[in-house]
Length: 182
Image (cartoon, rainbow, N blue to C red; front, side):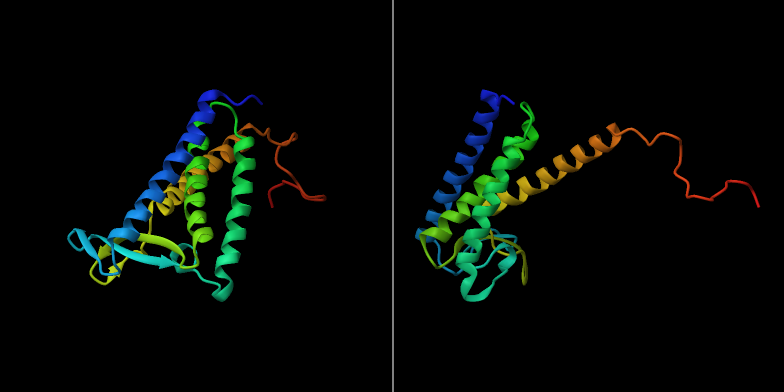
């Protein structure tokens, strides 16, 4: 299967864009923010510096969180690379979805490799005490790409099911089963 130049440009371009914007915004957060929230749009959107040693939504496995999530991220990237290799040329939606997830995973992986403090999160959304877990550009890319990928794969499954012919002979019957009215 020949990968087109446009597919490669989309895939690698999106990954590079996500990683670069994630690294730059995290650097800015570390340099310019403190743990004290700065309001951007009132109480709804704030900037607040947080280090997340766990995974999404603060999932943590104790002292082994860093190595466990390093290994899981590398494993996920291997699986995503295989999905990209299996992507049909011209399938832009699937290519974009995979690139977003890969770019986000690499962005957060850089933080895990760089230091033990955890992944830098700084986007704080909510109202009053009802706040979404603080996140970053990489998290947005992973979430958006994961939803897109789920949608694409669901569509592929539906298309494959629709293309599968029904069994010959009509509805399946059990031995000794009759269809006579009682």
